[in-house]
Picture 1 (cartoon, rainbow, N blue to C red):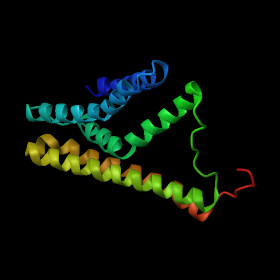
Picture 2 (cartoon, rainbow, N blue to C red):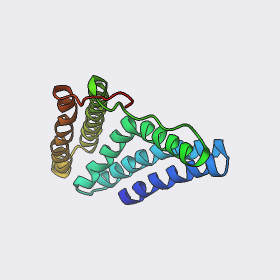
Picture 3 (cartoon, one colour):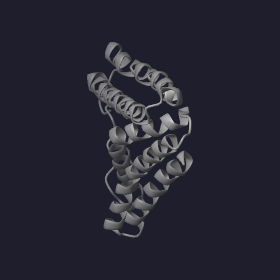
Picture 4 (tube, one colour):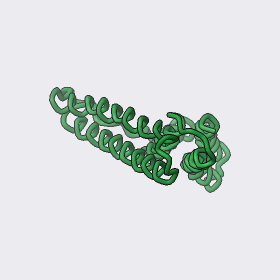
Length: 176
């Protein structure tokens, strides 16, 4: 199910962009792009149904919550980036926006990304805690608790970027 939803994410994204630009079916393209985050919700529901049906949770079950946390915090941004790139590359649209090259503007940008990562982790934890409570069997949901602790490394590791850009800002040359 996880692999199917991941493949589905990219298929819906590609079909949405294809319909929008190559086939000039803007509404169909928008509908397909809006369906992308629904796959993560379907995956999470399937995960809960699986565990409530007697399965013992694994880290893969925890991944369903992480996908939804990522989609909530980065899904729109990812689709917007892909849309802008596709528009530029295949439909004569303007060049996509790029993050600042350096200086404190880049540091602010990196802090914004980190805040999104931290929020995605918070959403993931909230979903995992809700799953643990809903299932109500600590023996079968131990892997979800462990997944939560293990994924805490992601926002901690990601903190390196904004801190490094804040302490050692990259110099911006004129014209960048």
